[in-house]
Length: 295
Image (cartoon, rainbow, N blue to C red):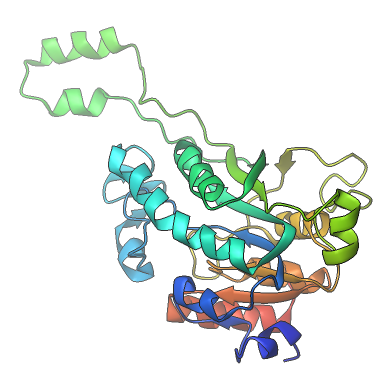
């Protein structure tokens, strides 16, 4: 393993099995050029008490704990996400070079809380990107609830007919949002680039839709292999983002490394990488994948 970023910060692997809130404290100030990460979404148990085995035991296709993913509404989720993410984002602010970018995945329903946490940590919110994919429809009718009721059968049929097949308020998911933020520049865009090699984007050779100017909607299929993680992201999508928002030879950090796809993308694009993952089993898989450095 050869990595200046790992050596300079006293680490011994690509992915450190440690809570990023502790791990990032070891990273030198203004030494990272891009944060590309997918934090816990704080929906239905996917929070800062993340436990892969517990989640898998409750997980069925599109369902957690018997409730469709995203259908358990609780105002506390957004507040808890903000309280968790703001101090994390403050650490991002410290370790990033001036003008550097943050690309933070977020569930659409709580993306406003993620954006507020990042903005309140000192960043400028530049845009909102969308990873577009083909999802599974998760809305369901109420017919089975009616049929399980103690009403007379003829009354049940009347209600079902009145409902007309209407479903729960969930359109087919086809996107995941990515908050694009930037740390304040030093001087002009040119000044900042010459000093830190950050703050400007490279659209000359995008990975996705190579014949077009990169847009805010990025169509990439979901990965078939999850590598033990329920929220694995496709490497081509991450390579696309790494290539546009960072320069070769700079350091990419993923505080919530998961399956390691960001690290692979960074290495394939000629960047260095620092990752943190709190789950020991997932961290081991991720580190091995980043070490190999391929899909």
